[in-house]
Length: 98
Image (cartoon, rainbow, N blue to C red; front, side, top):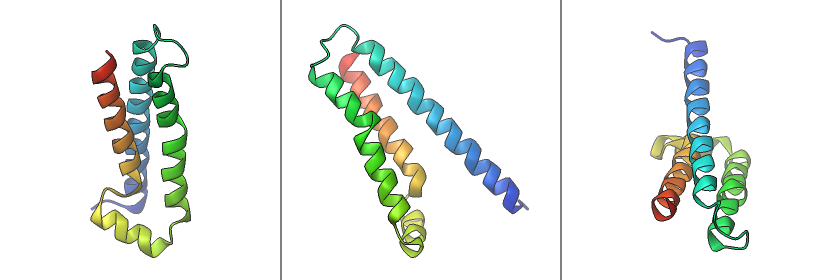
């Protein structure tokens, strides 16, 4: 049986793993758009992924009442889904630009 500490550690490792994956995807996306002008739509799209969308989704979860958070966690992947959504968007971006 797992203890509370083991579950917390598992969640921390999962979070760090997803964050590392996002960072790697973002670096690849930056390299894939190096040859484009700074005003190109691809750079704007990347900036959105790096700032606006992630911040908005994180803020929504932070301000969500705990009852709703638990409900959302059961119905979906919960707060970790932010990383999955962002990773999917970056992977789609890379398919178009690499």
